Amino acid sequence: MAKTISAGCSDEPLVQVAHNSKWITHPIYHRQGIRGALTDIWVRKGVYERLSKVADALQPHYRLVLLDGWRPKEVQALLYREMHLTVARNNPHLKEEEVDHLTQQFASLPSEDPVSPSPHLTGGSVDLTLADQTGRLLDMGSKFDDPNDRSWTSAPVEPLYAERRTTLLEATRAAGFTNLPSEWWHYDYGNWVWAWYSDQSAACYGPTRLPRDSSAA
Image (cartoon, rainbow, N blue to C red):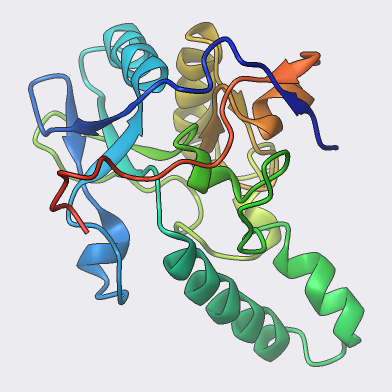
């Protein structure tokens, strides 16, 4: 699945995403107390610009919510371990290699490989959901990071949840994002996952780090 990295936009900076009238920032791993999780959300500049288009495309009774963007490798490693434990606990009948396979549908291995790094390490992945006009997060038919069949974007969930997922999916696709099929909340632009699902010859974004003068970590 790996794609080469194009030199055209690989040096695009990470930018901080602030809470504003267009969207709500809800850095979920920091709020969950995950060690090393960022207090703010950071994405590539091109992703930021496309998120603005997503927010503008939503109907007035919806607000876009940003849950996560760029994340450190250490946090990715912790999340992968926790997901692996959850999958193993919930599926005691599975063999180890089956647990590994199922885990990787919901959490990437921590990697800084220049061609196929952990998607969130590129700054090109964002986790999104919807809120109502008051800022209350809406039920999307499964919990965020819940490793079960209902978390697949096209899962046969109740009509209200399906409508919300479709709303988010259509707005993000129109802005150039691709969706990870196993996670209704996960969207990509510019990285190797985006390149794969959009049939691009190369990705724009490889692994990156926060600006040196950042105190977000």
